[in-house]
Structure formats: C-alpha cells, structure tokens
Image 1 (tube, rainbow, N blue to C red):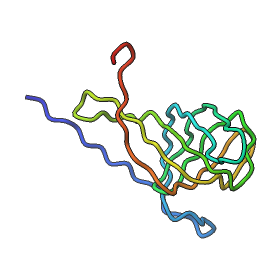
Image 2: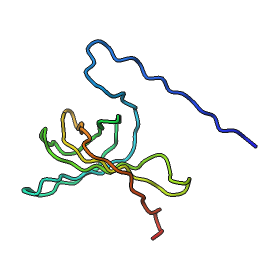
Image 3: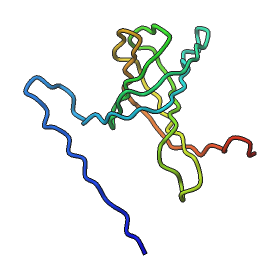
Image 4: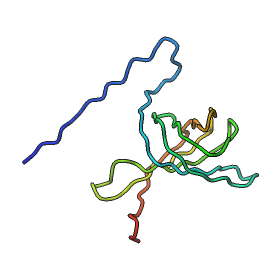
Length: 121
C-alpha cells in the first residue's frame, strides 16, 4: 500500500503596497468566456488562465473588453469528481482590468459543473 504525498505550498506575505485581499495561485488552464450583456451582441472567446484567487481570475483574451463588462468564464478544472468525472469551474463577474491581451475578472458567482469526456455522451 502506498501513501499519497501531501505538499504544502506557501504563498508569500503580501507586500506593504499590495491591495489584494486574496492570495493568487499561478494556475494555467484552458478557459472559455462569453459576455452576458443582453443589450449587445454576445462575444465569445478562449484563452488561458494566468492566476486564480478566491475572488478573481487573470486570463489571456483575444478581445479588448471594457472595464465593467459582465462575463461568464468556464475553466477546465484540474481535479476530478470521484477521480473519474471531469469538472469545469463556471464563474460570473465583471472585468476589472484589461491590458496587453489579458483580462482580470472579479468573481461574483461561481459553481462547479461536470463535463462529459470527449467521445462520450
């Protein structure tokens, strides 16, 4: 019988100028996004997460979206449910920063959803 190894990742203490309340974790995952504004055409795209916290996500984007834009993100989550069911983290919120092909989303609501494996229904 083998035992799993538990590793502890220590995050640095925030610097005096740091305004963030939540620690950021450098996680790179595939992300799909779409705008949620009912008055304009829905824009959709994809990218990669650069970091994630409990209150926000920084990700790459092909779109230059204005601050305040409401988005829904779907992030392929690295853990599986019961070690066999793939998961997506679906988060909704507003763009709080946009620079150099990157968008920052402040998470206002989130949930985990199961996803089917490719080739299965």
